[in-house]
Structures are given as structure tokens and as C-alpha cells.
Image (cartoon, rainbow, N blue to C red):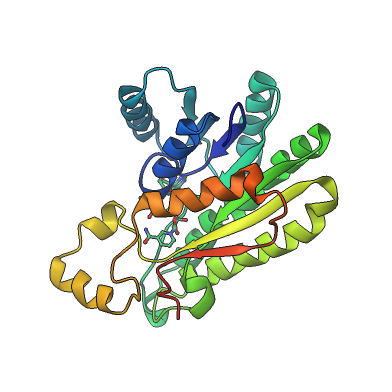
Length: 247
Ligand code: NAD
């Protein structure tokens, strides 16, 4: 579904991002993953290579808070591969701090990675996509971008902003043949969720109409569809992948 497309995936070293990288490789894309540290990038690459040594994948660890560093990395990828078809802004951190317990800079840290970093990657990518006549930008939102959550207000605030970026960029960039969409996962079994005790997970599952938490692959499938030509007329969409838990 993505034969010979060039895809950049931020936060691609584990969890949902790793599942997206794998799904894209299985579907014929060349993938460049970003992680926060050299060790985690190396670990992800060696795990992917052990699954299939011929997969065209490499990794970088630009500081996503640094617009210039991100732009330089993305421009270097364009130099090497000749184009960038898909940008997935997936890196993110969550938060559950109560409003009156936030420490100095904590709110800003969440906004910086979950929102500002997306803009840092979007700017150079849009320039490249305009020059090549089109492209596709995908953002990882969250179920809490619809309902909010009781605590960790920075996290839902950041994901509401992700939806705002997605809807606005879709309108701005449609005439340049750049589609912009987001996926809003519900509770997904990444390392963090998998480590939770059963007595915490079971009551949560009872509130989900599909009666299970999501797998990273459930979410990656939505990212595959939205990146592919099957979604050629889909833009400005926030696609929930949450077993209807948002209701
Ligand atoms: P995870 O913690 O397993 O992975 C996070 C990824 O982001 C990693 O690859 C990590 O390298 C990267 N990252 C973290 N901090 C970074 C930094 N400072 N600089 C650069 N990269 C950094 O998380 P996940 O659950 O796979 O989450 C991925 C995305 O999905 C996030 O945007 C998250 O908000 C969203 N999400 C997750 C869930 C869930 O239940 N797991 C639900 C809704 C939305």
C-alpha cells in the first residue's frame, strides 16, 4: 500500500510509533524513524533488522524542541531520498498531575513535545512537499482530545492543539495536494499500559464498548490507511481508534 514512499516517523522507537514503522515497512515504504536517544534508536533499528534484514530503515535523534535541528535533519533526509511523502508526528508524553501540583515548566514541557515539536517538523516538510507536488502529514492525537481528562490538564490541552493544527493545516495545505489527518487512539497496550496491574486494567476495560484495550497494531492500521492512496480524498479528519471509549 505504500510501495517506495518515503516516510518519517517521530517517536518511532517503541509503542505506537514502532508499530507504525513496522506496518509501513511491511507495506513497501522506506522509513526514517526519530527517537529521543541514540541507544533507543539503535535498539529499535536492530529489532526491525532482526525481523527483516532487508527493510530500508534508518534512524536519527534530533532534539524535537530545536526547530533548526529538526529542519536540518528533515532537509538531510530529502537530500538523501529525493523526497518525503509521509510525515508522522507521533512522539509525545502524557501527564496525570493535578492542576495545583504542577511544578515550574512542567506544563510547558508537555506542550513543547506534543505541540511545538509537530510544528518544527511540519515547517520544513511542507516546503519539501509543496516543491514535489504533494504529501501526507499525520499526527497522533488522543481520545482525551475529545472529552478532556480529570487531571494532567497539559496532556488533553496539547492534544486539543494537535487537532487544531490538523484541521487548520488540512484547510491551508489542501490546495497544495497535502493531506493532513490525525489518529486519536484510546487506551493502547504500549509498555506503560502493559505494565499496569490487572486490577487497574479490568475496571477500565468494562468502560470500553469493545471490551478490550487497543493493540499498537490497531492504531498502526489506521495510520496505514490514512497514509495510503485508499485515503486519497480524506483530509482534516481526526480518526478515533478507541473501541468507542470516548463516548
Ligand atoms: P511511548 O512512551 O511508548 O513512546 C513514545 C515515543 O515518543 C518514543 O518513541 C520516544 O522516543 C518518543 N519521545 C518521548 N519523549 C521524547 C522527546 N523528548 N524527544 C523525542 N522523542 C520523544 O508512547 P506511546 O504510547 O507509543 O505514545 C505514542 C503517541 O501516542 C503519543 O503521542 C501519545 O500521546 C499517543 N497516545 C498514546 C496512547 C496510549 O494509550 N498508549 C493513547 C492515546 C494517545
